[in-house]
Image (cartoon, rainbow over all chains, first blue to last red; front, side):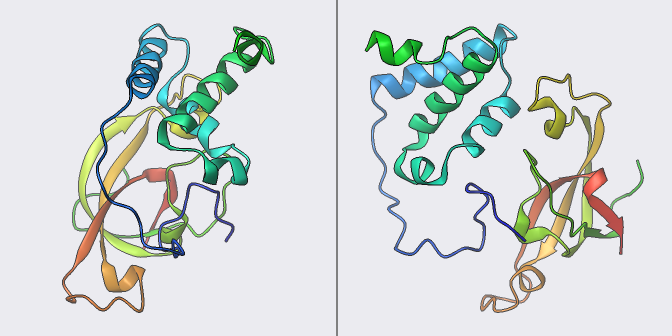
Length: 93
Length: 92
């Protein structure tokens, strides 16, 4: 059966998993807060957040960190809903 | 509720396109219902702008590690509990 990129239980990680803890950076905390605020405002829910992460191209998924995946999904969902215009965020950076 | 605690159940071995919470490593595996969590909106539709209704019963299902991983080398009584929605379960 085909595995989606995130559904990897039982698959070899290829190399030992880095289990060291690290402090979250400000943008990661803000990303978490943003997802919570969007959920409470009824804009997008956790299932949509997960679906957006799982739909990432596998090479981007593998490269991205945990909250980078959240940001990718939030941008995907807000663009689908027409709240963001495609490329709007890149244009402001 | 179709199932109750102590009942043997098998996870459907079908594939699923799109978002779902039933991991591939459990498809076709047999376990035992440990508890009934209640009914919840369906993440498979809620992930696509639906309200996720009707709610679906969700069970905590115990799987013996050796049944999930045939090469499992740990103690034979080792198990894991996974939350699985009713529409993924069959009588075993």
